[in-house]
Image (cartoon, rainbow, N blue to C red; front, side, top):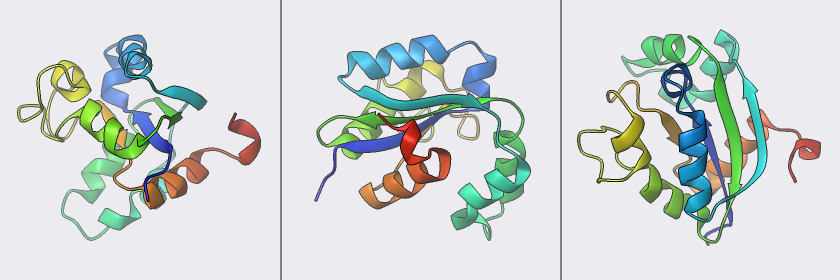
Length: 139
């Protein structure tokens, strides 16, 4: 059953390139309500824990290094059918394959530096949101 919340991160590449405002505008224009948001930087331990599902993959160390290379913006978003609708809004992981007008098509530089993270399931959205936010930070 689809829920009404998802989790996202604006990744270090998009923050560095000054895309925070433009990405948040796309998110809000698409009908998402921001119910939690923070500007922060992941520690190596945080990144390793958050991406533990990829720990055996050959790109894991590069992913951790990238995600700790600068600040991020993490957020919990609310909308009916949030996970699926947000995945459509951000587009394919590889920006070259992303549909026109999607966040990754507009703001990502490569498959590795792809501007945003979006939860891939309702279960992961809850886990990822709880990783970044305490209950008192969610409105």
